[in-house]
Length: 250
Image (cartoon, rainbow, N blue to C red; front, side, top):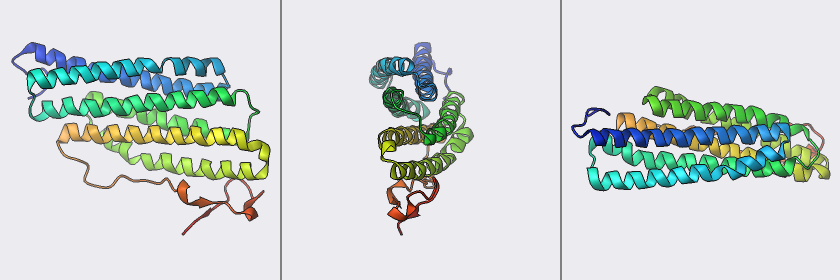
């Protein structure tokens, strides 16, 4: 039974409100991430601090979603597609809440970065952030429109985020090896990059959930993963060799 076709109209309104709550959460998380990325690019500690303070807005909405879902399960006893949508809302809300948390983490690092001298590897952060911003927007659109095909496109692009993270990871390590003064700012950059990569993972989680809501089944192929940073080793010989040189352990 499609949304809007229930005999009890108040049930339709509850489903609609749940849908809108998720979209509102997603919109705030999207804005939070964009603000955190701008704070890094502009070296704006005040913007970063405001982003951290606003994180509680997502937490509050997450609590609202939790309560709404519990009430609907208890009072409406949903079945079939309704049950999938209601239960999946919990999962999507958790992923959005984590996106908000990681955005706040990025903003905290941006505050610290604003006090340090600029370093070259920071140029790769905005490019990676822009890609993930697009993933967040596209996956929220796919949820709003029940567009499983668009969700699959988001799901497939997670590997691109991992590739960018691996490249930035190698570049940052070489700068740390070249000059000990780079260690502190580069460490912050590595944490920022990892948080961005994790946000991409949560966008991909949402894409998988959207696919399940639409089709009632899981994606039947393994998620493409390209994060190989755990295996990257830079040797002393790599010192001064340039930002893209590195070795992968076999």
